Image (cartoon, rainbow, N blue to C red):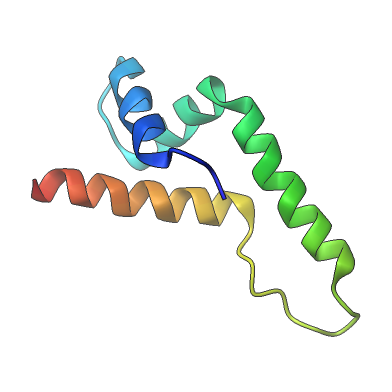
Length: 80
């Protein structure tokens, strides 16, 4: 959903003043890329409104999705 995610995570990490953990990265990402965050929320909202009553949504909430991607990216950075 978010374009150039790897570059944006690297830039977010470079702008952090404190220890890099999931919460700090999440907050800094929201501060640096509000348009991407808004797009993620709008996409979820559109999908949520278009679903039929009683059906489940296969799309995760925007917070969950971004945190999951941040978590996996941070883990991959530790392994490098």
